[in-house]
Length: 396
Image (cartoon, rainbow, N blue to C red; front, side):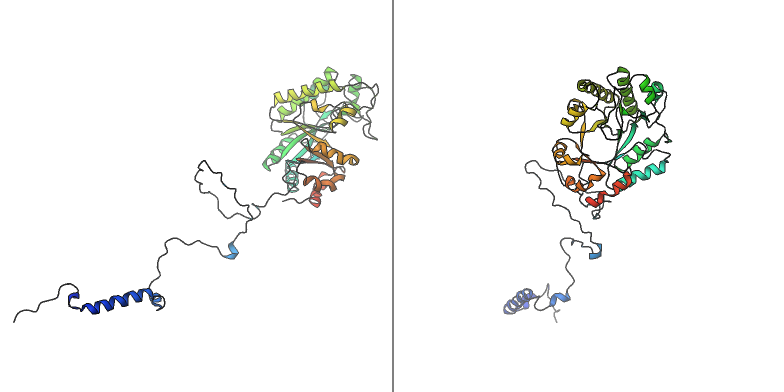
């Protein structure tokens, strides 16, 4: 008997052609209707071609009101964006838009030279800086000079007048602490030369100024009930004293952001003699500013004064020719407030009193008013600062 032969391959050759055709037809029909036959449930899940987007649970979602990004300009190709090293999810507070008040360049408050100085510790000074920041203030305008003396230990004062400073129990480093903490908080400190070139009978240098003939004849009665005496900067010794004081200050405190003078830098028109001192006052201020800039080029030399017409007409202050860095229009006379606005819109900003805070909302919403300075009539600037949020929203 011959051995049995084994079929090679799959044995398709023994299957009738008609049966093969039927099987192929059934296969095509089955693939087409696979889902209808629910056979896919018996098969393993297919792998996706791309990773799905991960959506956090509702409790993990941070709602962010961000503006749409600006369209990129066409033309030049843009650089490939780099991955941020910071987490993508940001808090609502971090992305909250600035209020209209916070968009002002300078939001300042005046502090008299005795406001933070008398026996104040470093902790007290730093806490007060942080308090003003919490009230939406970004600039502290603190008195460093007034009534003929400094609020810091001055070699110029000692050599010229025999006094080291005003009679005050301040800590020697008070201003350094103030500036340091303000800068840490993203704030500025402007040195306020309070009362300018005017003194009263309580000044520690009054008798000396009289004996040396440093005073302009007559009494300055700019403000009712206040008798002022004007140090005559036309006298070379007086002019040199002020210029030395100014230079000493910006060198002693090189990180000060600005120095500011006010309407007490001027000669009241009601003084006897009707002498026009306008040109000589201009010469003095320009020289003082030049000396300050030479000693400390980065410090800003500012002025808060009456509008240019009133300044020149009633105070011999032709400040438009003083080569100033910034001018803030003083508008404490509420009767002329609307007229003063037109001037404030043209310059660095406006100064209002505590009694005028009801006007704050309109000023904040006026985009032409770049900065707002607030003076505390009550002499309680901390309480005055707390009133700001009654008239305009602030962020803490």
